[in-house]
Each structure stands twice: as structure tokens, then as C-alpha cells.
Image (cartoon, rainbow, N blue to C red; front, top):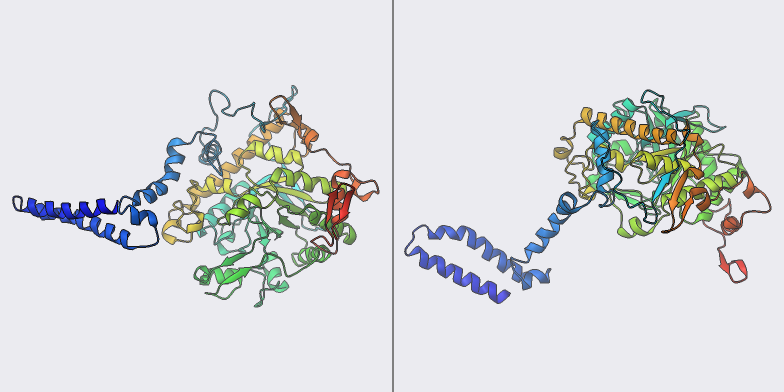
Amino acid sequence: MRLTFALFAVFSLLAVYLLSLIWPAAPWLLIILVPIIARGIADIMQKRHTLLRNFPVVGHARWTMEYFRPFLRQYFFESDTDGTPINRMHRDVIYQRAKGSRDSTPYGTKLDTQRVGYEWIGHSIAALHHKASDPEARVRVGGPQCTQPYMASIFNVSAMSFGALSNNAIRALNKGAAIGGFYHNTGEGSVSDYHLEHGGDLVWQIGTGYFGCRNQQGKFDPVSFAKVATLPSIKMIEIKLSQGAKPGHGGILPADKNTAEIARIRLVEVGTEVDSPPGHSAFSTPLEMMHFIAQLRQLAEGKPVGFKFAIGRTSEFVALCKAMVNTGIYPDFITVDGGEGGTGAAPLEYSNSVGMPLREALAFVCDILVGFDLKKHIRVIASGKVFNGFHIVKNLALGADICNSARGMMIALGCVQSLVCNTNKCPTGVATQDPKLSKGLDVPDKGNRVARFHKGTVHAAMEIIASAGLTHTAELNRSHIYRRVSETEVRRFDEIYSNLLPGCLLQEDKPSKFAQAMQEASAESFMPQRYITETEQGLKAVI
């Protein structure tokens, strides 16, 4: 191909010369030819891309087609049930509800109801009618040690920081929360002025970097924490242990992104690189973590305090529950983030292969809490691909009390799933710090869209619940949801995820299903002090 290019260059220049003898305007063709020839020479001389050295000029078609591939696939070739992370069918219903347009579908389901994994709720002959004017279901968050409980919506904005999202995106989300009466999780980037501008309810997330409540050494600072935690807009405090998209992975705020504004909000030095370590420095054992929860609750004047995490080694959550029993200190809520959760940027291996998926994680957490007789004190929040009313109903049936959504709310803002969140070039102004792009996001309009999406989705969930003959989300249980497990077999969730009796893990005769985790877990350590594995002789400690 290089020889072909050389011949093309020589003969095209010769042709222009000969043509100029009879046509005076022919040299103008050099405006096109010279850049092409120069590009080809540069391609041959460079050593980075073999494809360009071997196929100068035309080799660039590969990168051109690769650039347009996602857009062509999304807008021309995807079916309604294709597309990842969120398929077209779910994106469409979010857009429709956010805009307040018709969200019904014609001609029946587009799903294959015979495929393994298909799920549905069992309706009742004694179905009820849920009217749009009926009050929204609310859930009280606040255990016996909480003096300022919060009545939460069953559907809310999941954690997304200012920095990951633009200032206008944060404004619009909070305006939507204020209009719709649901909470807005700040993410670990602390509470910005944009979170407070419209007065929507906030859940303040405290990460390993302690942004907004740290001293100069990056350690937790009680004074700065109390200053923010007692603000009227802050309704709950969430300690972030890990997130589904990249559990066990810390983060870095690059120096060039650490602007004066972000430095002021996060209480860091402007223009410096700031690390978010993988683990917390304020506590090092489950017992210490319970006392930290009690400290935060006291500093926040009795507001609910909980934690968010993705399930890793199951015995570590059992260790937390043992610490709750030993200390008598309970979190007011636990947010379970599934391994399918989203993020602006994460290593591929973490997004794909680290962390338990939400359904299994949620069932496990709820079972362990029931087994330790703690579920009555603690609300469970589910986070991970919650886009419609049935997603809410499934999670609540498994044992959750509340659901959070991040990407669903982003799509309601106008996100088009362009998958460039990690480039600062988000075309809709949602996941970017480029003022030229974020300026295009109209806060009043998008705030209303978020509120309408929330209202429509909650209404859909309540209609589904009414179809099952129920009046409140608290009446849902695992027997209401069915799942096809093979081409010829259907099982209810309670047959797949069997329920435990309250307090059974406190008895001598414990369910064998959790024997390994129970033996391995210790309230004195997050990681197992000894690993228990299955052998031919039963469960044995690894020496």
C-alpha cells in the first residue's frame, strides 16, 4: 500500500502539472492534494500505528468508523431491548415520563417471556385501584437511637458528586427533589452551594477522603462535620464504604481538576492532587465503626446515620452485624449497591468483575439482618439499575424499603448515554465541568423533568402493588415475584431466596447456608481472622 501511495502522489502531481498547461485553474487542485500527500508521508514516517504505516491516509478510516460506531448502533441498529448499560426500552420510558408525554406501549410486550430470567409479579383477583391523587408511600428512616427520623420517598436520587456532575446538573437534581419531595444524595464530593440552592432534601455522603469534614491531614474533623450536618437541608448522613461500580478502589482528584471552588467545598488545598484511599481512617474494625456511627449521629443532632457498600466477602457484613449486636449501636439505614452500579469512570475489571450483583446482595443483606433480628431497626436502600416501577417493586419484594437511582435520574436530565462521562465532553452538560457544555442544561426545565420522572415511576410502582391487592410497599414480600429459571420451570422469589426466621442466627442451631460466614466473621476485624473453606470433611479453617 505504501508503493501504491507513492505512485498516487507522483502521478497526481504530474497530472496537475500537465493539466495546468491547458487549464490555468488546475493548480487549485493542490489545495486538496498537498494535505493528502503530506498526511500520507507523516503516516509512513510515524512508528506508533502499524496500520497507518502500511496503509497511509486510508488507514484513518478505521478510527473514523470506530468513532461513529456507538452513535450508529444506538440510533440506527439497536432494537428496543438492546443497548447497554441501559436498553432503549428503559431509556424511552424515562424520557417519556420526564417530559410528561404518553408512556404507554402498543401491541403487547417486546420481551421474550420464555427466556430464562424473565420475571413478573403475581396480580390478584381482588386488585385495588390506585389513583394519581392517592398519597405517595413513605418510609420512616430512624431507629431507636435516632431523634430526628426522616420520612423518605420510596424512590430517590442516588449518590453523584459535584465534580462528577456539572453545577447545573446538581441544581436541576436538587430542584427536582424539592418539587417532588424526595431526597438527593450528594455523593462523596461534599455539599456544594448548588446542592443547597433549591432547598431539596439531602443525604450527605461521607467517603474515605472525608471531603467537607476533614482536617489538613485528610482525617475526619468533628467540628467541620457538625457545621454541615446540622444544616436544615441535610436529612441523613451516609458513610460510603464502597460502591458497586468500583468496590475496594480508591480515587484521585487530579490537580488540574482541583479548582478553587472544588477545593473550598471539599476542604482541600487548591491545585493539589487529592487521594481518596480505598479504606477509612476514622475506624479500623466493625466495633470502631459502630462507635463512629454513634458519634456522627450525636454530632448531627440525632439525624439518621447509615452506610453504603457493595457486598464483597459475605462474612464481612456478618462481622458488622455481630458488632451491632455486641455494641447495641445500629445504623438507621444500609444502602446496598449492586455490582452493576454506574460511575463516571472505573477500570473495566472493576465494572465487570468486582462486587456482588444487586439482587443477590440485597437478599443476602436482608436475610442476615433478619437472622440477627436487626431488620426491625434498620431500613435497607437498594441501588443499582432502578429505572421503572417494576424495578422498584422487585427490590422491595426482596426486602428493601427504599430505592435509589443515579443513571435513571441522569437520563431524566437529558443524558443520551453517549458513554463519554470520563472525558469531560458530555454533550448534554450533565457529566462535565466544561462551562460551555453545562451552560446548555436549563435548570428549571430539567428540574421539572426529574420531578415528573420520579412521580410517574412511583405512581407506576404503586399501581403494580395495587394490582397485587396491596395498599402499601411494606406489604410486599418475596412470594409476590415469579422468575423463570428454565424453559419448563417457574419459581417464586421465596423459593429461590428462602426467608429466615427473625433471630435464628443468634441461636445455637444456625442455618447451614450461612455457616461458613458465621464462623469466619468477627466483630473485631473486617477481614476474616481466619478463612473458612469447604472441604470433604466439612468446613475447616485454612491454616
